[in-house]
Image (cartoon, rainbow, N blue to C red; front, side, top):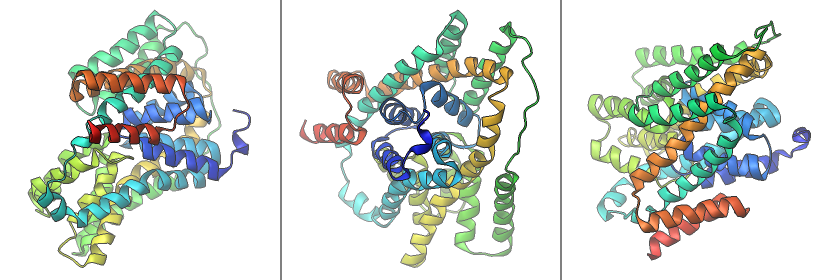
Amino acid sequence: MDNISKVKWSTFLKDVLICSLGAYGGPEAHYGVFTDQMVTKKKYLNEDELVELIALTGILPGPSSTQTITSIGYKVGGPLLAFLTLLVWAMPAIVVMTLLSFMYFFLSRNQVDTDILRYIGPMAVGFIAVAAYRIGRKVVKSKLTLFLFILGMVIPYFWTMAFIYPLILLTGGVVYLLVSNEKNLWHKVEMRPPWKYFIAFVSLAVIGVILTTIFDYRLFFLFERFYRFGYLVIGGGQVVVPYMVTDLVDVHQFMTLQEFLTGFGIVQGIPGPMFSFSAYAGGMSSRDLSSFQQVLGAITSGIAIFLPGTLLIFFVYPIWASLRTMKGIKVALIGISAVAGGLIAIAAFKLMQDSGFYFDNILVLMVTIILLLTKKIPAPFIVLVSIILGFLI
């Protein structure tokens, strides 16, 4: 960790690209890839630091896994590398989804078979399971942390509302603080909040509303709506679906529900952040305009939905670096991290439940786990093998 300042940006960004190409599924699956590539193989941070970032982004609006890897970029090289990290992480999927917005009729008419992706789910579970195992070993240190770990598994299994995740994370921290015997938990720390990022966060929201109110221009509308989607959502890309359906399908009728669901179904098989679906939705919402404007609509939507969460990370991360030196925060993080470990563990079970506990799925799961624990194989290679198996079998 002492050599972190000597890391070449090109090397780090290559590792970010590896994460992007190997990250299928929701944020929990992405955390598995981060654990494998960024922690175990490259040691840009340790498990404790990764869990802290997962917990921090879990209580902020925006795409949590994108904010997590952006924070890692900030840790390694500051705000500029963090911004480049965001681009490398998100742009491959945004480009693919932009192209798909032009190919809808081809996809629907030819009924593209996504069955070859059926082993992606069990493979992603393998990444999550290994991450849960490695993180669990770090965060479960007592009976109380074991209880909080189990709590993090049980509650989200039965209650899946978006607000449950930040609520249970904060609860874990408060519980651990209340039972702690530590003294002198709080003291003043010197903080210099980068207010410019928070001002930009608020200003863009206000400017978007003003422009949309004054001008009847599609790009302004798409920017305002997708920027709003970005700051209203806590959690993964699936959480934003109800907002998009109501606004883009029901109210403005830019596309049919079937067109919406076709794109959302395809994005499940595309590596990278789930929020990249916004590029498809923005492109489809602009298809009655020129091709150039459709591309602009897709890019505008893709950028707008990531902006709020990114600006918040740029504002919060430097503050967090100071706050985490306080003993009270350190104590609370023990409880928060235990809950976060449980959230990751139950995500593995739920995703496997969705995929089905069939023999071939279990075999793919076990082989993925064994490879991750014993070999240093890049995530994209494991993904490619899973797709080939789906095609051959």
